Amino acid sequence: SQTIHQWPATLVQPVGSPLSLECTVEGTSNPNLYWYRQAAGRGLQLLFYSVGIGQISSEVPQNLSASRPQDRQFILSSKKLLLSDSGFYLCAWSVPGAYGNTIYFGEGSWLTVV
Amino acid sequence: LAKTTQPISMDSYEGQEVNITCSHNNIATNDYITWYQQFPSQGPRFIIQGYKTKVTNEVASLFIPADRKSSTLSLPRVSLSDTAVYYCLVGDGLYSSASKIIFGSGTRLSIRP
Image: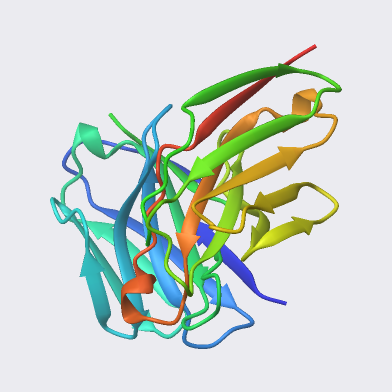
């Protein structure tokens, strides 16, 4: 069966510090990968999605970036965090070309920028 | 993905049946309708998916009329643990544009004792 893991689960970072969130998917090949952010009490905001290694589509560039160095690995980064980057970050995957395009989420990472 | 419209919030009581309707007037021929449930501090999880008529699983039922311009998620005999945000998404995976999956605001369901 397919599984998705992301880490760290929680982190507190000072303003201006770098960020790295990592996500891996097991049990499937060539998945579509996604990073979402959810501010407290708000909806899901799509940040990046990827249809293949090195292929990243950005929805909200700002000071965040994403990379896909391997087929089932997706990394969210920032060189300098802002207070507004605080939130709940979710990695997700879907099967390209599948009817219905169901998406599956990881456990999430809580980021607090102080 | 086709645009969807659903109520922002709903309230109900334990033991009641809850029906959440989603409008998707621009649904395409190949589109499926999928519902997700999200609890606080968790990612959305798949509840049910359908293309037409009725689909039922151990969690919910999904009713889709013949014109497919709307769908209704039915939760039988809800409990406090059904308090969550419910999202309706419409789309398919056949086209490259389907890779971009955007969630709407969802419906915040609150169940009271």
